[in-house]
Length: 304
Length: 140
Image (cartoon, rainbow over all chains, first blue to last red; front, side, top):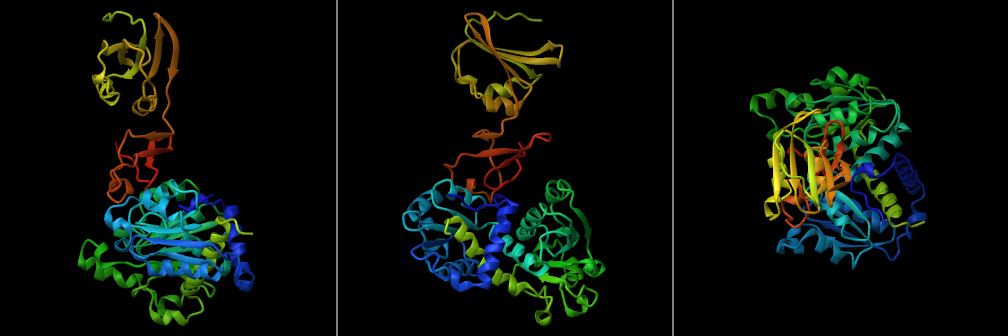
């Protein structure tokens, strides 16, 4: 039985297949409402993430299955010092599939090495979060009609943002992608992302500190949060923080069909006034996350 | 060149980069053996100019992955009854287990002590190994 630990575990063909199933679920949810009858999803959240956990749980309920699990390590045996391997071997006796969030990088891989049932990585520290990337890809597909031939801007904290790194990894396998990286110099994309993903896959990319200079070129704008604690100096933070806040004024020069995305939660990096703009896609992204998780669980459980 | 008696049954680790033999001696835990071991440093070499050689006068199992990781140019000669029966050229191993440690404090190996530290070769040309769990690059 396969697991999903890293977005690159899925071939582009498999991602296409998941997108097609998710689109079909969106069109005809009733046809899927009983597909997982009798199946149980265990949500093992060793650190809290209400948004992701609820998305997985809603996805399984909408497929007619059931959910069990815990939402923080203190309410699990991990608090008593149990290893990931032992927890997984135990939970595998109760559940058919596991969605796991863990603060340590690589914990879901350890889980998958210790069970026969599928493990879905629901986030491991700052490392991978493949179902967020799938939600992003479904959103791009639904907004742009394809995963090829567009210019995507990533704006904000590109150094620590795992969603950005994973989405770049996923997009590096498609044709005609141009990447524009917008960040303060302290939060530039790590070098290995440039060398091992962008340059290696011959993806055209540019770097800038000013969103306004490039916004008119973009088909997609992927916003992330810039946190005060990431800056080395308070002055620098104060100087730059507003450059990374998206508001209606900055959108004036943007394309009419721009798709504004954000992995959420948002703090103030997208002004609330943008929510009413047709180009805002971040709440659609949340909904798409549920549908793609439904498609993923059907695939991993091999439900026809 | 200095002469050391030929071995009858054992292993010759040849073409070691000059100066690397002691590191290798420790990696292979050769100090735990009680057979004769000769370490020849800075021996003349046509290929390398200078090289180190280790001769072990006992038929032991050598961890070839460790050797390949330290120096893929090393050759291993197996001697049986005074005759060379096998000559092996090494290469960088695809997977390396229990040789180097992941130093990323956010990696699951930092808290689960019984997990074997395993690395995967991700870039042969630049000799890049990454932890299979957290994908951090080894800097050893």
